[in-house]
Amino acid sequence: MAKIQAIRGMNDILPQQIPLWQHFENTAKSLLTSYGYQEIRLPVVEKSELFHRGVGDGTDIVEKETYDFTDRGDEKLTLRPEGTAGCVRAVIEHGMVARNQVQKLWYMGPMYRYERPQKGRYRQFYQFGVEVYGHDSITQDAELLALSWRFWQALGLDKNVTLQINNLGTNEDREKYKQALISYLTPIKDQLDEDSQRRLTKNPLRILDSKNQTTQVLLENAPKLDAFLSAETKGEFQKLYTHLKALNIPVTINPHLVRGLDYYSHTVFEWVTEDLGAQGTICAGGRYNSLVENLGGPQTPAVGFAIGIERIILLLQEVQQNIKTKRCDIYVISDDKAIFNAIEFTETLRAASPLLQIEQNHTLGSFKSQFKKADKSGAKLALIIAENECDNKTCTIKFLREEKDQITLPQDEALKLIDTLVE
Ligand code: ATP
Ligand code: MG
Picture 1 (tube, rainbow, N blue to C red):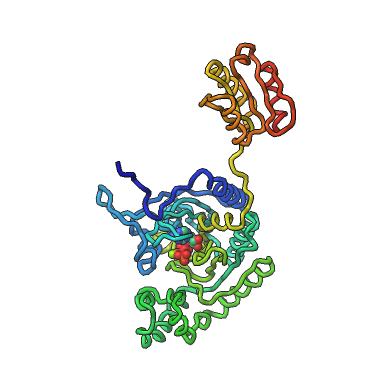
Picture 2: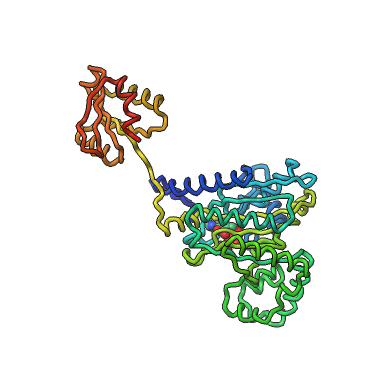
């Protein structure tokens, strides 16, 4: 029969990769907890409308990348392409942002985008997201950036990443700027790349982000967003920049950074690396003070970011960190006659010393082949409970990594001793 294969761009994460994933997850969880953030778990599927209104109709994500479907009850649903919209929906639905309560949240899980799969870009990928509701201040923005910087340090990636920030101003500032940009680009529209031509009416700010050389040259003389920002906004942004410098964060201002999603205003940022080729953005986010209101909630300032976990895993592999892989302390060897006694002994040992990692041999080949497996497992000790040991209620301990004679002793004594032999 023909084999069924996984969907293109949707990957299995195999056991040998799991130690890096767990290292990421454990580091992230303990860091976020230490800053007073709480986890929220959200559905993978939402009403399509949430993303059209939340992420924005004119964005790449909603225009070209969502997995949309109709369920058996004729509801239009979408596999979430990102986490922020669903998180906002949830905090509104559960009254968590009423009267501007402060909520500091994180989540982790798969996201879905119909993109062209390549290294660091997949159709199912994992994000670690952080969102803060209820604080409208650059000090909160700075806390998030300090937190992310501490995270790269904890992962040993701080030499590989830099921070880019920009300020998109208020919605009104941006609206005025959009009009100025459209007026500048419309007469030279034909010279723009195809994507930028389309964006001119739908999402003109995104043109600044274009990777096309000709478009970039044409943009050199375009009006600059900076000129449309109020003195107050500029002053606050300068304070943020100075503060980040004081925290020793490797930060630069990138006036072209606009982010692909509609909901951002004021501070936006990306953590980038040069070690992953084209997929160099490992974390991206910013302030989104109008999204909660746009999705039917009370006016609530918000700021957040999302980390692409696969890209971090690739980076961790790149810098070749020695993350401990699978561990085994004890390997239990037996034979047909004694196997049930051996299993009973192992279970008693597991109950007495729950931190030990113990593997039981169930194939029961020759002792030679069982010892080979014991050696390969990395175990420090092999425990042998074969016919002889079973009859005498004893257990033989063989030292696999030390030049020591093996010992045979009563099983109840062995139970007390084993823990001390595996430090
Ligand atoms: P990019 O410019 O790389 O397409 P984006 O602006 O679409 O990124 P965001 O929506 O801001 O990305 O998502 C936050 C992070 O999630 C990105 O910085 C990236 O690390 C990761 N990410 C986004 N899309 C993918 C994908 N298809 N596969 C793997 N990771 C992704
Ligand atoms: Mg994208």
